[in-house]
Amino acid sequence: MKIVLAYKQEVKLYSGDLVYDTLADYAATEFKIAPSTLQLTFQDDEKDNISIHSNDDLDVMQAVFQGKQYTKITVEGTPTSEIKNQPSTEKVKETNVTENSEPLKEESKT
Image (cartoon, rainbow, N blue to C red; front, side, top):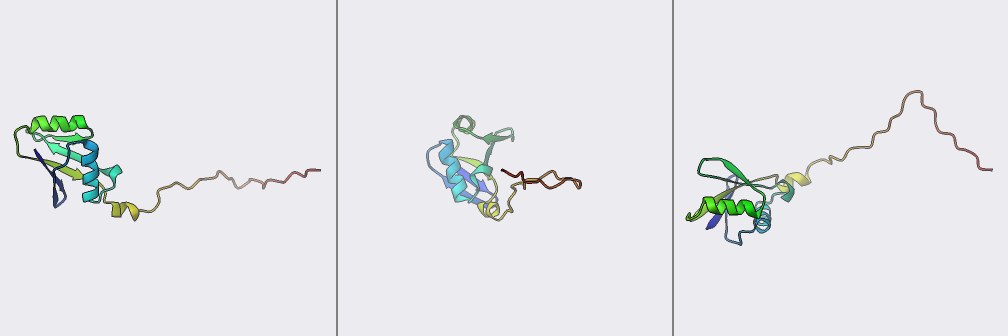
């Protein structure tokens, strides 16, 4: 069985081992998608979209498409170029200061 990976208008043929980590790495690299945002799905005979997250999911896909020459996997995710250009989402540490707060006085050490 050959795997066709489809991302937006781009299509790639995957002929490597049917191992989730290898397939996911290939898809992320070829389509330049941030691995943490990668989503792989296939559509079964009933037109349900099935998420692929593991080798077990790939086994299910193989069973569904047994005897078929090609299987289409839809690839979704955020391009790495968009991740790099995002402003930092790190929260700024807030301090709780009231108007009536007095400054701290240093204690003398004598």
